[in-house]
Image (tube, helix red, strand yellow):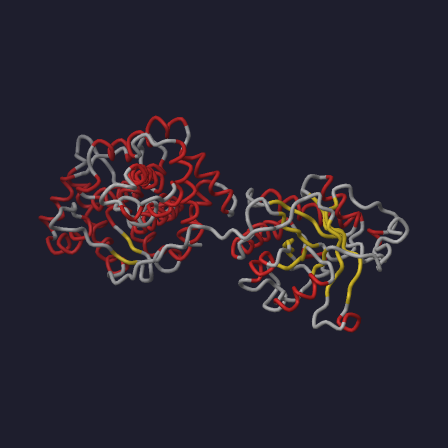
Length: 518
């Protein structure tokens, strides 16, 4: 009968359903008693409609399967734009991970209206194209809609399979169209409370079995790291000191670098380099940092500050001195929960702005991740030895998760705060064009630590140009860390030539860490 009217014989039995109601144990008992095996539920859509915490586990533990649905559009065709596709790509997979939907699962995106061919071409297809281009590669896309919509979206390759709204038999997109070849779910009749006598309504949906549904829960083994309590003074308390330092550098440069026979005019960028060079201090000197930044540490300016403004020098010194077993370098806060090593951040900014040979990220998150790989290798190889009890019998991925950003001195929370802050600050410095402004560095710091720091962990998406998805980030980080130069340079020097298994585990841990902070 579905050849004549899309919904066919509505009295036929169904092995599945979809519903906006929470699946309590009582409701699951009713469904199982009536032969239902699969259930469609919403990933988002408000407190009533969307999945509840623990609901996926309850469905699976009762021997049933789930198909996740994403719908925030209603019947408004204006919703479907390329811009919205990009937003939904991120929002849907974040919600999927929140509820433990495992990777490779299909998420069905709803077009709950009846677009004609012109609207399918002008609105629906651009939306799904953008969705597919920005979608997390660890998940797959399905489409819910009329036969016409589902066929066109799948034929373009923007969805793996379809969930067909055949129940809407009066829709033009269901009249005269065959059911899509790649259909997986067929919705054909609504059972209302008044008909069933149950305390919930549902739509009868036939599952074809052609594409798998969710049959297990897989919450990430990587928990969001605990952010340390920050009691350190705010970096904003040093802005005026850094402004004074910038003014001193102009005077120093004009007196000591230029001469009457060889004049050298100070520029704003020269001042920025002078300040980052001073702040990076003794901790970040030596051939590796000369190689990375293109500059040696200018001890002459440090001595100039000490001689001409001892008070300023003494205020800054605790935050830029070389660490020893007896004397630690002090940290700063961003005024909230960020933890800043001023010396580390200055060295990273200098590398981003400098003329060093390696890619700039080597001085930032890439270098810290590489040292984390070295630590992970050591922890894994020694996991059953004395002194390594916390890693005993753990697999490599778990040990990487326990190391990256956590309990290491060389790849921790403060390091990552500095890395991402440095990238954003140097980018702001590059945007300034006033060639009479010698306070670009302090101005960029003030701009960033007024409000921008709250988005620090999002900086990596801009830097490496990947989609804001966990799978996309994992792939992009791995590609960055395994380039030809990285394998013969960064990983050899800072990671002690790790195995590919260690590289993959650590890149995954790093991506999870960053993603959990957003």
